Image 1 (cartoon, rainbow, N blue to C red):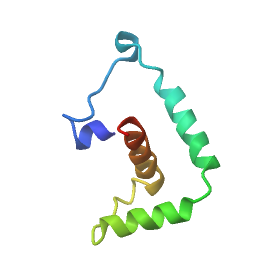
Image 2 (image 1 turned 135 degrees about the horizontal axis):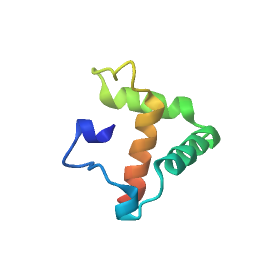
Image 3 (image 1 turned 45 degrees about the vertical axis):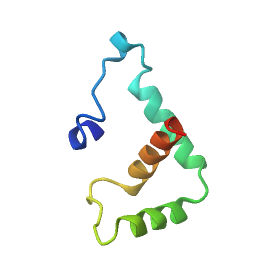
Image 4 (image 1 turned 90 degrees about the vertical axis):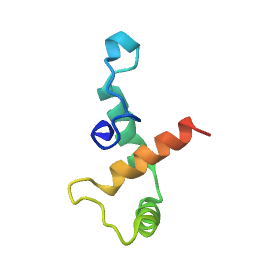
Length: 77
């Protein structure tokens, strides 16, 4: 999904050609991390405050955006 918003930043990749793990594996791990994360409400509130006055798209949940930001942050420490 990120590719559609920022195509030069998030390029689509074929996991067979690039040796990147399966998307299903990534999303299962992401789901599991979110279920273990205890500060869900605080994270949602912080993100909502950071993007004000804009509102996120109603079909794009805060959870997805929070996890994407965490993943990007982890890769760019």
